[in-house]
Image 1 (tube, rainbow, N blue to C red):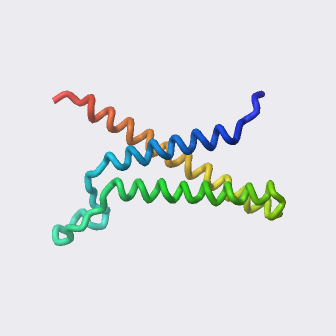
Image 2: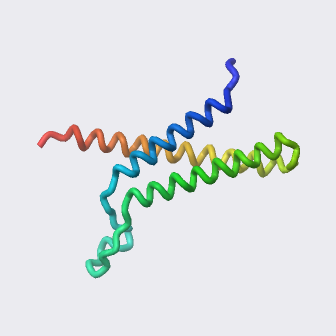
Image 3: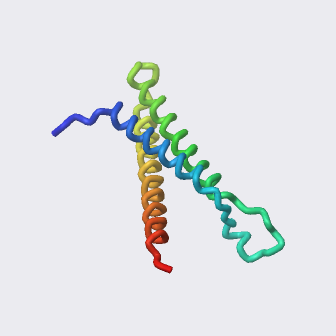
Length: 117
């Protein structure tokens, strides 16, 4: 079995994060939160790009925290292996979920673009 290059994985995750940030910047359309859909008196909307950027930044923060904890374990400045592993798994799951959302949005956009009028 091939060894997994952690630096290569981090680079690919960074590239994916940058790609998603570019995609979210391109989407400037505003959407209304579910609570505000029925009320016409409230005109404040939430931009999809803001929501997506918030999610990307949250996942990025989780990955940085896990990376810092792993570095502390490697350097011997921390012995909290259990919490480090949990944070690493949380960051991995959050990244995977974000990738699934990106893939679903890309697929939906492809379907919309293929609709014949």
